[in-house]
Image: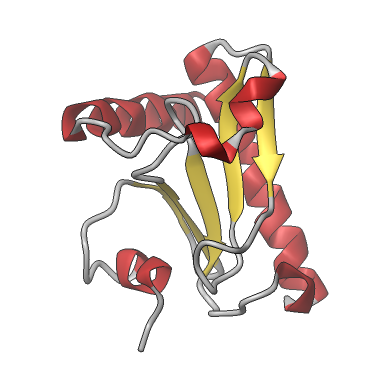
Length: 133
């Protein structure tokens, strides 16, 4: 069965996608550390990021870099966090999110009750920043 990330990428379940190309997609998480928390995910279902082909890993980081720059601009954050954890879903992914302090990296603090309207607004903010890029 396809992972939840593949289902989002394929449009089988709803997702707020901010980037899509032939190798990766990026979409907002429904349990963000901070507003704008985005996941950058390869289309290929590879569980551990260290098992990605080098060219795909490089593209994943290139897109994460571009998403990070857009997030920094959209939220005026002093930093953008990047985390590869890989325990939540067996599909490699990069967490990219605006950060103001080290506590913003604490996954025990995710917000699992974000209103849909805020996620919609976050998607619009990031897309607008990417358009200015």
